[in-house]
Length: 372
Image (cartoon, rainbow, N blue to C red):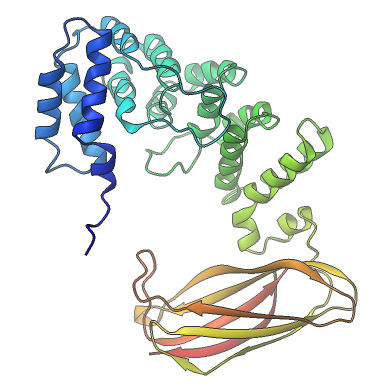
């Protein structure tokens, strides 16, 4: 049986730590690469991914200057080459290069803000500093946002992406920021016309975060950008779909309308299952038929209402089809859905379940089944 994949061991191991040690030895004449590598590796066994990064920073700062300005100079001297500027997407960098961000927060946040921000600016061109800009946004919001407003026009797209990604309300794995949309939206307005997909994807993820609390704001922004025509039309179409993805799952009428899916046209629908009861692990088979009086672009989803312990319920939305219903012509669809008993993110429980068919955000048919 193959060993289970370990992200922490994939990212932090003798090879990667040896490479990092070599970079510091090349940039700092007195740096003891053998000592750093031995110390870092010796502390990995009992630590998880994020704790390993903090431990590596512990080991590193033992060979750096005590005063932060000098330490920052040393960290910059040991930085590897900038990430390839010819790439335009998915070039996040390597986690071993997070250490300047960790040390900038530890030693620069309170008394050396500007020097620390300079360091983050350089470091993010090697590995995204989205986690480490956030303490500065919380401690020094006005000063950090002013710096980021300038970064929004930087020639390096990793710096521009940091402006959007670092200010996201719900950045995965990261600490929360206390910013409001009034503070971050002006940055997104500057970045929405960016020519680089790595930046526009971040803008969309930021919009999707905002939409969870302020859906109308996001719709208004996207409508305004469409009218402004500052972004390539196909790119903006992609951005609109990506930025509204949560609202689309929720069937938000304004989001669906912006994407061209009308919810005010009557759709007749039937929904049936191959059987009335299934066991956990079975494959559920469903079929549906849709008809409309007029030709209609459709976004078809299905929601499963899951039984939960204590009489509660949970819900998940699944994609079925993006297409078109021709006037007066039935659209027939089928779908197989495995009722996973080994899912890591959502546990199934026996009980009564429901499937709801949704067309352009409107519930059009429903059927129940028992899960055993």
